[in-house]
Length: 220
Image (cartoon, rainbow, N blue to C red; front, side):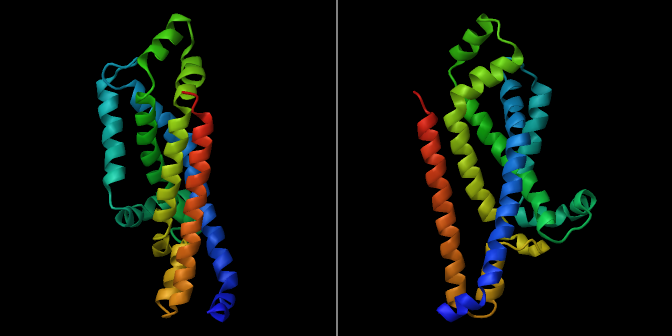
C-alpha cells in the first residue's frame, strides 16, 4: 500500500495544487461578483429599499438557470466561452471558468438569504441616521449579516471542492481526477481511498475554520 502511495506522491501533490487553484479562483469570483450580485438580489426584491421587479425577475432567472443546470453539461456547454476567455478549453485555468460561474450564482443566493435575516429595523435606523448607500451596505448590512455570509462562503467552498472533482473532463486535474486516473482506472483501490481521505480531511478543515470564524463574528 505504502509503495503505491509513494509511487504517485508527486502526482498527488500536483493534483492537490490543481484543486487549490480551481477552488481558490472560484472563491475569489464568488466574493468579488457573487457578493454584490446577492446584494442586488436582496435590494431589488419586492418590498425592499430599491424594489425593481423587472431587474429582480431577470437576475433571479439567470441565477436559477445556472444553479439548476447539471454541472457536467454546463462545463461542456461553456467550452466555446471558456476558449474565448482563457484561450483554451483544456487545463486547470480553463476549468476555473465554469466553476467560477457556478460559484457566483451559488454564493449570490446564499448572500441574499443571509441579508434577508438582517432585522428590517437595522436598515431603517441606518436611513434615519442619513447613511449613504455605501455606508448602509458595508457598515450596517454586511456587519449584521457577517456570520451568515461566512457560513455561506464555507458551504459554497465545500460545494466548489465537490464540483472540482469532475473537472478532469476538460483536463482540469485535481484530486478527483487523480483518484479516477490512478486509483479507479488502474484498479489500485488504496490510491483511490487515499485521495478520498485527503478530500474528507480538506472539507473538515474548511468546515471547522468557517464555523469557528462565523461563531466569533456572531455577536448576537
